[in-house]
Amino acid sequence: MDCVITAGGVPGPDDPLYSYTQGRPKALIDMEGRTMLERVVDALQTAHGVDRIVIVGLEGDMGMQFQRPIDQFLPDHGSLVGNAAAGFHWLRETNPKIETVLFCSSDVPAITGAIVDDFLERCQPFDKLVYYIFVTKQAMEERFPTSNRTYVKLKGAEIAGGDLAIGRAEMIDANEELFTALTDARKHAWKLARHVGLWTLFKFLTRQMGIGEAQTTAGRAVNGEVEVVVDPPAELAMDVDKPAQVELLRADLRRREAQGGS
Image 1 (cartoon, rainbow, N blue to C red):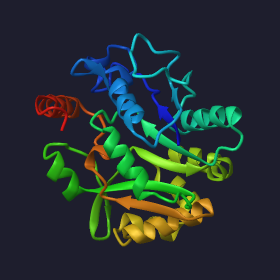
Image 2: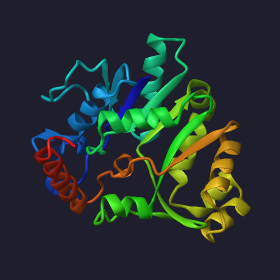
Image 3: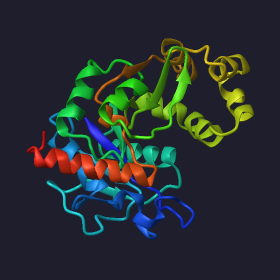
């Protein structure tokens, strides 16, 4: 499966990560001698289920080294959705028969090829429109006790969204405007209500919506089946938004490499 890595974003002086980036892209934060992006690409290029890789958000390799050449670099398109769509469109231009695409963020440096392959195996036979990840608070804190993640509260569970997803080509074509609107509205309840419905939003805000209903609601929004993979390896949702998370993942990588990469 071809993969789009979204690597846009340059933290500004008021961002907590600025001391690590100093005006450079977030994807270039050092993780024990390699950038976050290099770590992510290492995992994807090691995975048996990943073929071509497109990185969106950087003009080129910026001095990074990868196991194999990257198939394409594309510039930042201004948003997560814009970058994901740009990568997909490039892949389809070079292969009009493409059916499914793997999407990955550039800030999950703890993933491995085996973890990526495990996720792809869980999603077989790729007959749903979208596959997404929820990692529960319990599973995250068992693996990363000091992760300080932000969780969404659903009925019976607190969850963190993952950083890998699979989308079918027809889903991206039909819902690009919807995803852009939802991304723009995510911090404004009244805007979200316009897209998901007032009753759905009320149930979500009052924690009356469980994981199954969230999955069904998402399916209605995109006019197709959505499958949520619950509690795959927590590394798939351990992304970097805060300085403490940088240090946590650096320490975890040191431990893992001291143990021979296990």
